Amino acid sequence: SQTIHQWPATLVQPVGSPLSLECTVEGTSNPNLYWYRQAAGRGLQLLFYSVGIGQISSEVPQNLSASRPQDRQFILSSKKLLLSDSGFYLCAWSGGGASYEQYFGPGTRLTVT
Amino acid sequence: GQNIDQPTEMTATEGAIVQINCTYQTSGFNGLFWYQQHAGEAPTFLSYNVLDGLEEKGRFSSFLSRSKGYSYLLLKELQMKDSASYLCAVDSYNTDKLIFGTGTRLQVFP
Image 1 (cartoon, one colour):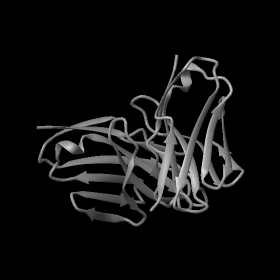
Image 2 (spheres, rainbow over the protein chains, first blue to last red; image 1 turned 180 degrees about the vertical axis):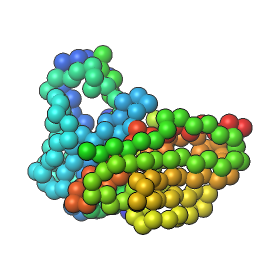
Image 3 (tube, rainbow over the protein chains, first blue to last red; image 1 turned 90 degrees about the horizontal axis):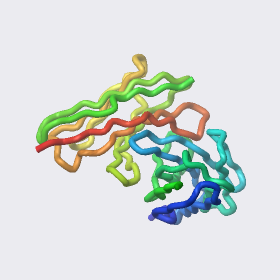
């Protein structure tokens, strides 16, 4: 069966510090991978998605970046965090394009202070 | 552009029926998802509609009208555990991404 891992579960970081969130998927090959952010009480904002190794599509211009160094690994990074980067970060995978069900990881709650 | 609208909050009583609406405007519409998200947790899949009509899955049903750009999620025999946010999401042809609505927070009271 397929599983998706995200870590850390919670993170408190000062403004201006770097960020690295990792997501890994097990039990499937060549998944589509997604990073979303959810501000308190809000919907899901798509940040990045990837259909293959090294292929990243950015949806929102911001100080975040994403990389996919391996087939089942997706990393979200920032060189300098802003207060507005606080939120609940969710990684998801699917077996194909947008018409496929997406499976979400447990999420990382990031607080920038 | 793409636009998805859902009510922000709804309340209902245990045992009742509630209908959560979603309207959308999008080019190249393909299908519509409903996800459930409990507070502090990840969303989980409920349904996916591509064709017009009602699809039933136990206590939950989802309806789609492509011509009207409209969908609803119907929850019957409400239980306290149904208190959650319900997210509507749209996918379009030739894309690899979903566009999510802001979600409807449902509170079920005893």
